[in-house]
Length: 237
Image (tube, rainbow, N blue to C red; front, side, top):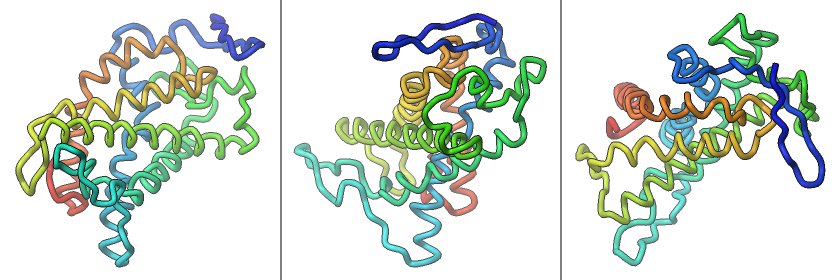
């Protein structure tokens, strides 16, 4: 075990992280990272459910984030596809999936790669959110990371619209990287910055994060096509 010392305000928190936890550019390490951050990735699916499916079934009002406002370039700020329903409701799926992962792999160590216990580091560090208990902490982390993922997705939409790359009907915005990478990058930043004393914030994840960013467009496209096929999305991207 190696110690990573993280400076926090005027005191130190010692984090025990195995040196070979995620390895360097190792396929199994990338899979381990995907399983760790996977629930946050799926917040996009949660956003489809809460922003599209539930309002469609129940008649619930959809609160569009930009309120229908245009930017000075004449294009919408974000468009109708980004709603408060999805932004706040989508991460609920991430929270519950992180709870499920914690239940399935609780106590798993290095010998269980890639099925690591998401809260493995809590054996060595007692973060403030442990007041929620084991599963409450798992839900909290999942929700925050899922929210970060959707914030990144919204930022990508904002940039696309400033460049005039809008999605209209079945016509793609032709910006596959802006459709995929922002949500992953912001999600990872949330993990590294907000949970530095958990596995999510270990600097040892960065090599695998780079590989996962390369694979993210494929993963994101697959999820969106699935959502389109089952009627949760109006476009397959």
